[in-house]
Amino acid sequence: MRPLTEEETRVMFEKIAKYIGENLQLLVDRPDGTYCFRLHNDRVYYVSEKMLKLAANISRDKLVSLGTCFGKFTKTHKFRLHITALDYLAPYAKYKVWIKPGAEQSFLYGNHVLKSGLGRITESTSQYQGVVVYSMADIPLFPSSTLRKPMNGVS
Image (tube, rainbow, N blue to C red; front, side):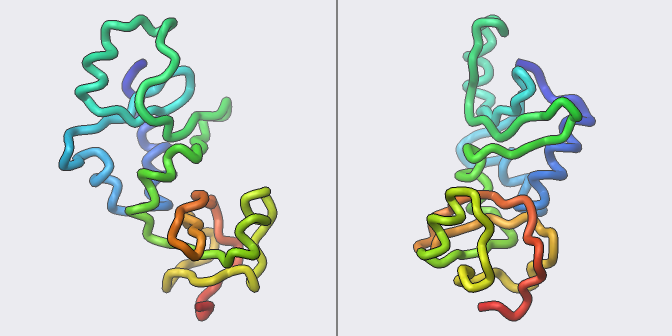
């Protein structure tokens, strides 16, 4: 497990900033301690420094994972978020989309959400913006990479 390089940090922070914007600092400096990002087997883990010090005694080949997996780097060095990062991204999300219960199951099976399936959307959400998809009961479902159509005026 090693710290991220400058290029890896830039790529990862750009991706996370699409969802939470300037709230990125709140992920690192939390009231319950300092957290950091570490790379292990092309996967980025979100780990408290206290846990990181304890894991220093374990060899890299024996270590399977540590902390919460935020995403992974592809072979082309792009960063992909994992669903496990949702609990940390959802409270700080800038742009949110709520979908109706009828469209919720279809979305979870991988289909697109039609305009009739949208319940609410945050104001001033632009096209191709990273959004966090919520159910109408305010349960985060997924960080969606793009919002394809401008939805200004939908409520």
